Picture (cartoon, rainbow, N blue to C red):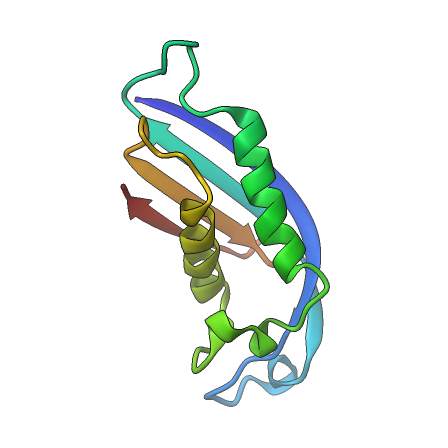
Length: 125
């Protein structure tokens, strides 16, 4: 199985809802790191699992959409607590819409909200 990955960093704001999490219930900013891992058993005729340029462009589109924003205000988070678990799922779904996935069997997004806390979501393709 082949894998290819890219990482990016950006800042965004959120506040947790639906429970009493103290300061986390107030708007605050995180410096997020996102890692996208694509998996597949075969390479294309050029020897690529996926073109890194197209993956980079797809990641940039999602990153530009969320960077500097308050996640709670984005329609994708409507009715959801903007946890890193939900964020990873939403990022994965958005990225999957912008990628050619012919050679892929899985797409995993891992998001860190600090140096020691992360969540991931994997979508089988």
